[in-house]
Length: 312
Ligand code: BDR
Ligand code: CA
Image (tube, rainbow, N blue to C red):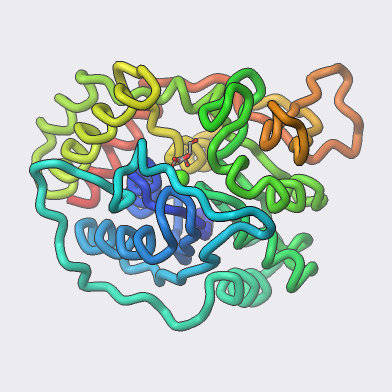
């Protein structure tokens, strides 16, 4: 039985790859895509999600969510994702042929989770956690029905938004606090893991060799992502964060994890948005959170390549 997931995302170059991996792998059933303002405005990331769905023939319904964080002002990641949120040079993105559903993402999340049996739906947030936090507050019973939450965000050794804080968590730390403190199983796939998911030239060559429109799109996507990551953060090869969540769900051997209580810093002149993982042993019996530690780089990219091939 494929794993049913809802991908809550802000495409975003790496969110786009998460969409492709989820749609192109037989172990995953993409029940819905919800969008959240993050890498760019809600309007832009929702448009981008529709473009990716059009390129890859993804038929999962798309629902737009929150335009801004719970408490803080909206900020975007234009330095990494460009003015459109999915900037690509020398490639014509299509006019979307898929529409956005009328229901708000928060209502779609609640309705879908409550309609399914307990333990059936897995949530995969790869943007700020505003939609998920609001869904929990609106319908607290979703907590016992969701199988698990596997999110991209945070880190325990490094940051990218600040020295110690990661972008998705920094944009809406209050939402992250809500998500971390509900008693559902949470896996935090943070920067310590995703900085291992580098799209090298070797991977680009393998994608190019696959041929076909989806592979061409991903190659173009990585070209722009590489340039932006080099300029903004000094990376030679861009870290493709978001699909690591999906890879973990497809094959837990691709991503090793370690149990640790998690907190998010809400105040702190230099630390707001930082995630704090408590690795002291033994982890308390009630600990329901874990963090991703090591990536099997080759297996990860094989999953992405297989998905791209399947979608072509
Ligand atoms: C995260 O921030 C976004 O820019 C990416 O899409 C990813 O979800 C990495 O910090
Ligand atoms: Ca993202």
